Length: 328
Image (cartoon, rainbow, N blue to C red; front, side):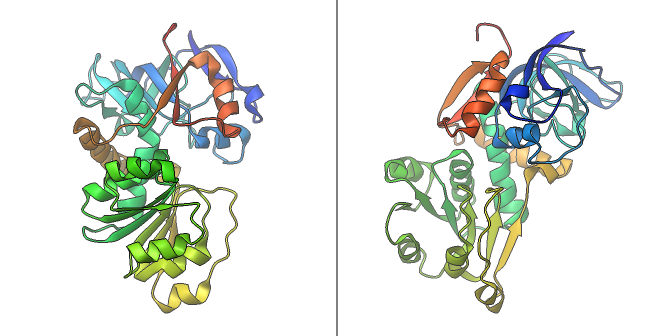
């Protein structure tokens, strides 16, 4: 047996239990991992509450991202061996049990090596936002060097990763964030920072990008499409990646008359190949020291319900990470 955070029904954070569950057994192409740390994401709360529907088998271990150490490998696994430090960011979806347990089984094509010297708590905090940022910019946004990218919510977890990755790819980055985050965003690589409280945010963005934005991403989930579409260059793209409950107005005329486009995606639908490509990019930036979480707070795995409650109440600044070891 092992300890895990799990649910037996959908509902509020109160349905989360912490206790003994059977230790999973790896199949031929699986890897058994001793978990070090698990991050807490908004998508975890959506799955737990039922707002995001995915096949579940109860009892269901919650969570999707983890770092840990390989304990055992299936007979068909040759890329990993016991003792390897690893991470994963796609459990807890499409019938897969989640990450919030002392031991988990991970399909080998969804497991990645932890960069040499990387901190497992910092890395797990980056796993979901950084992979989301990569997919938004490159897989779905088709970003090219020299283009202009507008990032709304640039001071947050996903937003900051968007700024780092876009700047590293040679894009001009216009960051929209709070005034107190201006220096932070410039340090990440933003060329211009617009205070989101400015009474004329669109005008400030136009001044910073007079030819229009080639790519526009709103990590804050406000999704003001009337404003965003008007800020695009010809053939500019908007990628929607947050704001589950937003219901924006769609300005159809300006959208199609200038060949502009809007594309939505959820990382949970990414293929194993897409996630592996994103993981390679994340690992490079982590190894280079260019990608780090702004702030993390550690709780214990037994505090999973409290972590979900705080996240839903908007009382989290930075990233919550659950430690599996006692006293950590």
